[in-house]
Image (cartoon, rainbow, N blue to C red; front, side, top):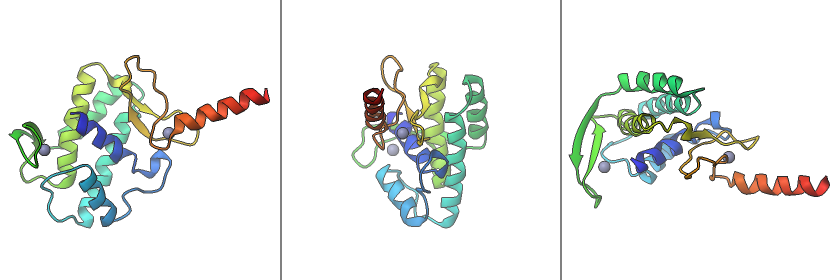
Length: 176
Ligand SMILES: [Zn+2]
Ligand SMILES: [Zn+2]
């Protein structure tokens, strides 16, 4: 679950709509993403996989940026309704026994939609929708899951936005 949440965060943050360049520009980037997230059993990747994964990515981004919990639920249900989900216990590549939610013959996009969709569903069921955040730094729209105890995190960590903002605040105070 934790792994799937980290995967969906990393996926959404490859989107140009989070403020950076297209992180899934081609098949090389797609392959690198699959390897870094240890997404198993996807076979040879094609331009079709790339297109489909980008669509799923945008659907997940809409869940992260939903205005409120009911909207997040509606958007996630729409995504789940288009995804085949078949829970299956498995052990592979040295990982302990865990559950895969994607169908055995799933494409890459279906694989990610199923596993990350279920992980987000559990988060919403636990009443944790507000942990799905967008970075508060002015030029950054990256998403993150706030896992702090008091749900106080406001900046993503990928480009050290927190440090950047603290330095800016410090300089602003010195000028004042
Ligand atoms: Zn696995
Ligand atoms: Zn940021």
